[in-house]
Length: 136
Image 1 (cartoon, one colour):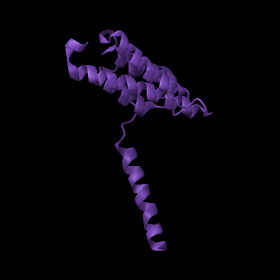
Image 2 (tube, one colour):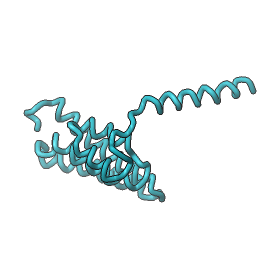
Image 3 (tube, one colour):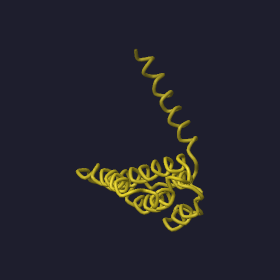
Image 4 (cartoon, one colour):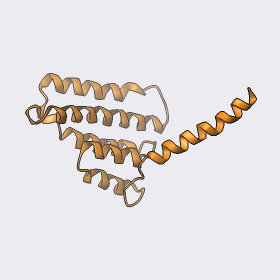
C-alpha cells in the first residue's frame, strides 16, 4: 500500500507538469495589465482572445478587466443578431456568473466570475459563427 502511495505522487506531479506545459505562454510584451489588454484587443477572434486570457490570467481581481475585453470581443460576433428574448437569456446567464461567488471572499473569486462571463460570451459567439451570417 505504501509503495502505491509513493508511486502515485510522482505520477500526479508528472500529469500536472504536462498539463502546464501544454498551456500557451502569455503573448503580451509583459505581464503589465496595459500590455495584456492591448494583446487581448488585437485578438482576431473571440476564441483567440479567450486563449490569451487563459494564458495571461492573474488569478485575481485584475482578471475582471481582461474578461471584459474578451466579452466585448466575443459579443461583436453575436450581440447585434440577438432578439429581445435571446438578449434577456444572455443577460441572465451573465447575471448567474455575477452571483455564483457572491458569498465567497477573496480576489480569486472575482477572477472566477470574469472567466465565467467570458465563457458565456464565447459560447454565444461560437454558436453564432456556427450558424452562419443569417443569425448575426
